[in-house]
Amino acid sequence: MSSTLASTNEIILDVDGLQKRYSDGTLAVQEITLDVRAREFVSIVGPSGCGKTTLLKTICALLAPTQGEVKLHGRKISEPPPQMVLVFQDYARSLFPWLTVMGNVMFPLKRRRDMSASEKESAAQRAIEAVGLTRFSKHFPWQLSGGMQQRVAIARAVAFRPEILLLDEPFASVDALTRADLEDLTLHLRDEFGITMLLVTHDIDEAVYLSDRVFVLSAPPSTVLEQIRIPLQQPRDQVRTRSEPGFLELRNHIHGLIGKRKDDAMKSFVLPEAAPTLTLEGETVP
Amino acid sequence: MKRIFNRGNASAILTVVVLLAAWEIVARIMKSVYVPPVSTIATTFVHEWFSPTFGQQAIPSLYRMVVGYFFASVVGITIGIVIGSSKAMYRLLDPVLQFLRAIPPTAIIPVGILLIGIGDQMKMVVIAFGSMWPILINTADGARLVPAERLDTARNFGLTPFETLLRVIVPSATPMIAAGMRTGLSIAFIMIVVSEMIGSTDGLGYYILSAQRTFAIPEMYGGIALLAILGYLLNAGFVWAEHRVLAWHYGQTARPV
Image (cartoon, rainbow over all chains, first blue to last red):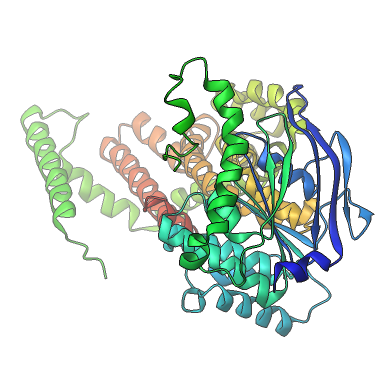
């Protein structure tokens, strides 16, 4: 799957002028407009606390928007559609501890009438295999490491056969090596199952590495600062992709977008000489 | 698998032996009718309880307790789930329940006698009333504190509210339900003794009180000892069953998540 191919695919998800104000008056999401094409990998990056989780929950209709609308295949949605499944950051809280890995993956399939019992079984097994947990299907989630638990949550989502997977910082609470594994797993699942991915993250490098397109959000109340196409070579590779000159350019550009606003806010207490060399992660810009 | 006589058990048994021996010695020195030696109590205990007396006195108590406790569990869990999973019901019923809960359950025994008489039903109702509260309150908390991600997951996968109740809320609440049921069990035990002391012609509460009134002092202590043993066994049986049913919960909390 190349990004050029993806860019010609039809738009399946259309988010138009989405606004979310909480009942206490807090404006979490000011106005977000974005679109996602079939089999595309789209990321939304922004500073922490910019309402990314709220945005995802509003997109999949777990929360009702105060303004704007979400269209799936051109049709406005108001209830969580089965074509979209959300993977939460906190796997320990979204998995069911009284069910085994197999039980968790079967959980959403059990009530489906469009699949026979054996189809459900094999869909679950295939999903578990795709995330590399076949040996652990009889284990309970809490017997597994954090990264493996997140794989269970991903397998559960994939087995349900959604068109779009919404990923809410799914790799934020695992170590760096596990994180790289999980990143590549999502790329692999996109190709194997043809699932479109919409990821929110605060990690700019991760967004650039994974995505065909990145939407950069402002601090809350959030809006889209810029939409960036990522024309890096496919398939992506942790070492090669991250050392492409284009990769560094793109990530620095995004850092600049987010960092500039942060610098503006920080100028009052950071020394003038020190400020320009600081980025979000505290690294020195070449 | 587990050895019965490990180091912890051995020292616990030693403590019991020392205490009983101390009682025996003190009682023999005091020579009081009111504090018979352990050996006398033990002889009476064996004589009384390994006889039809067990069927006449202990079985009625256990029967009332089981029935009362069963109703307490059914009603407590049902109302608890309803209140815990619906904010509207919670707001509506919580003040009333907090008030009713504040009534010491023994205080409703006169009401029970007035309305139902002194038969088995009165005792069952009183037991049910007393042991229902911890079950209800814990169940409601368990149902209310289900992580939002679990409920969102259920909605995301298109579960109906009823399916969510059965497949997510109830299983999530089971550890709290079990904790409430355990507290309820000990309250049921208190209520059975008290209700049988006030209006009864059989049962362990009745037996202990009438033994005291007829100066059958070793029998009185023997009845108390039987209550202690039954209470201990019931609780141990409950814990055993709980650890089997909730293996996932104990497995999960035994490790750092």
